[in-house]
Image 1 (tube, rainbow, N blue to C red):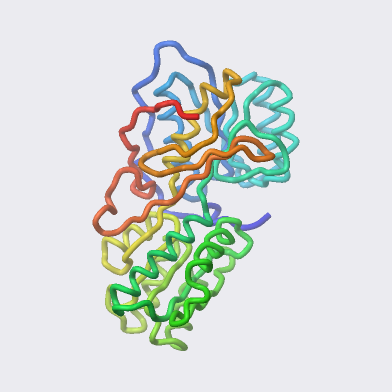
Image 2: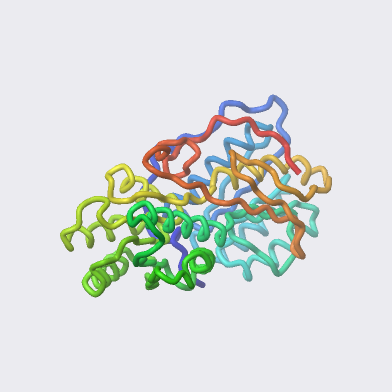
Length: 348
């Protein structure tokens, strides 16, 4: 199994510790089980609490189960849930291949299964809600281009991309999109280095080594704000001041947001976690009632998201949001740990 940035210990989001919505419908529509892969970092626990708030708003009770980063445990959880005859299952799989038998068994029992954040493409699902990682990479590329133009007056300079673990599908998508925007630009040099196991000390060492070998680096793009503090330490060690080397991240982790506020980082392309969770709530009634979803483009928390029908089922892909010092405190940036005050409105 590959490392994910969300399997590495992260900053706790104390602000989401009690996110149970008070807007619960009088008549319950049933229980929905949300299976998260792990609770080691902030992303999935926050996802579950936000999803619970949205589902409670439209009359569903949600129960969260933690897979402990063990695919066999998560598969056993699915088996046990099937016996409870839930209204639906929302699944962020520990391992997408290992989850397939459980998905197929649940759907055979008439239980809708929704993939959240982690794609499962080898079997049918009722719905998939994910971030468009390639699109996030492209947006990050556009931000790097913007920063270079603003600093240099033209499109030229040197960019260091510090990836996450190269075995993480999120990393693959970000690197692909970022490379599409920057590779081939005649006056831009792109240097790309991995961060094995998403280990911040590895990212810090990479930044330090590259700043020594390439003291004229203009922009550093690290794939997660989880790595921001380590990179900032390398910049300080190299005698750099905040903003002297421009930085951005590709997920909106709390660590990156803190560096934006401190002036070391200029932008983030935040993963649309709240929009991903809201999309699940906005299609759930249709899925439960076996109604078809209509392809098209829909706005979710101000983001244009595409609903398509793929071989594995309805697929909802949502782009990221650019975060700068001007909007770093927005409640729809997941790293801030605040639920946006929004009414669940059916889509599809």
